[in-house]
Structures are given as C-alpha cells and as structure tokens.
Image 1: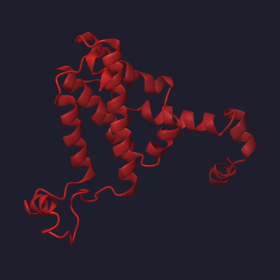
Image 2: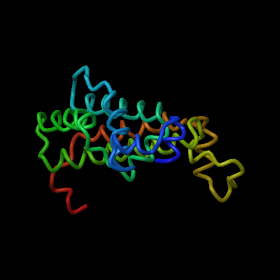
Image 3: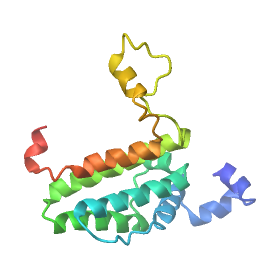
Image 4: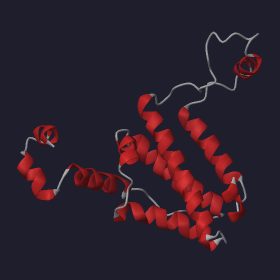
Length: 180
C-alpha cells in the first residue's frame, strides 16, 4: 500500500480511507477491469456464446498482463465480474445443461483462460512448448516430426484459441462424468 501511495503521489491514509486493506483494493481493481468486458454476445449456440465470452476475458487479461496473476489468489466476486459469469452460466442452463455440469464447464473454461493469460505475461509471442531447438530426432521422433511439419511455432494466443475450440467442441458432458 505504501508503494502504491508513493506511485500515486498520495499517502497510505488516503488509500485506507477508500479500501480497508490490500485485499479490498485488489478486489476493486479486478472488478473494475473485468467490469469493462463487453459481455453482449452476438448469440448463437452455447459453444459460440461461451467462446465469445472466454475470448473477451482472455483479450482483457492480455491487455492488462498484471491482472491475471492476481486472479490466482483473488477469485473475482464483484458485480462487474458477475455479469459475464451469469451470462455464461445462463446460456448453458438454457441449453439443457444441469447446474452441476454448467458449473463445472464454467470453472474449467475460466481456469483455462486465466492459465493462458498468466503465461502471456511472461512471453506474449513465445513459441509452442513442442518447439524444442536441438531435440535429438532419433530419440524424440514424434517431436521432430511435429516440428518439421512447419505448423509450429504457434503463439500462446493461437494455442489458446485451439484449446478453447477443443474444450467447447465437446457436445456436452453429463453428470455421469463425476467418476472420471
């Protein structure tokens, strides 16, 4: 709080007048930024709406690279954040998902988005994890074949989109998957 107050050319007393503690300040920042997300989906299938919302979150976190790591320790619960969560869950429930399946899908996609956004902070245009220079093609022929195919490297943003398509391409998982 002291460092932030100094950066803002203010005092810690001023910050504490508005926020009870560091956690409250972080929660307000998270909610403020996530509240700017355009959640007005163009409509379509549940997969299209969920992909749109996930992409909007990813793009927002990419634009604010210091925010994603904060989400790991500070799950967003403010009103700005709840709008997107509500829309995501509502479309799943509307399309026949059980509450349990809708909740699991939302959690999976949200964690997926945050995980990729955290990586973006470190290397926005890094090569794919399969692109390993100097990997011995005799010992690692599968890796060598993929690398030689020319499809790599992919940016993390491209990997994100591909994985999101995989996750949402599954028609639906019913409650019988609990045992898995």
